Image (cartoon, rainbow, N blue to C red):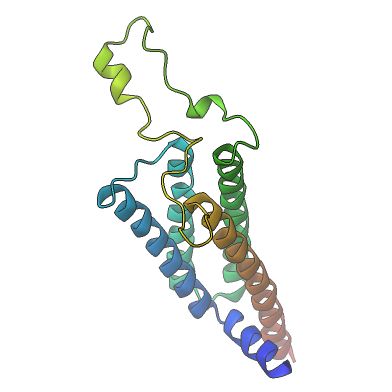
Length: 183
């Protein structure tokens, strides 16, 4: 067990590996969302779209982190930002899960616009309408019955924990390096 802990700590204290992994997960998650929309015909709702932004931001942070991976204190700060980013996305996905499962009502962001609004044509109203409904599950895993929002909660909580732990380990490594240089 100690060897496993040491192995995980070694991997998570390597900024290059952590940022490469985060970049891969962010790009893969966005690609999967666009694939589901474009090729499987699943129409995203507003909350589905909102869950894409943190993955795009996470990809940018990871790319910057890869470029600056030798600057350990900076890497730790980027990982703290990443962890907050993933925690935020987990919150959005959890809210979406609650709307899908009818635990609570959807906010106004998920409702259809008023088609009788003055100053807009019918075409403008239709174009401003979201593709999917937030309170419907467009796809659920046939084995467990989990939706994409459910899986996103799990994924983002895992990325949050990994990023936060990596930030702590890299900050510790940074202090050890600076202490060794001072001695």
